[in-house]
Image (cartoon, rainbow, N blue to C red; front, side, top):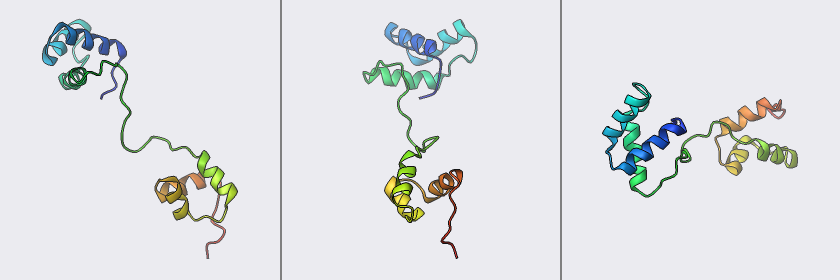
Length: 115
């Protein structure tokens, strides 16, 4: 779902509970709050969610790549077993090897076994 202000989400729920369709809701909200306040597609997404019985106005968890991965488990692993390879670390933590490389670089770790 799109990230829209909570007050617009309240308006969407209100319009839904009035029995209006998503297009009418978008038109009404834009008339009250200004052109472009909410897109018709956004209204359809939220109305679909309401029809499914989810009246929560909070965003659902997003899928896909997280913005930041937690490096604490990586720190613990390399302190316990400093000879683990980036391939082993990536398998253990369930992330890409390049992510491990980047985090190790950020922590100032260098490959001393490289020949």
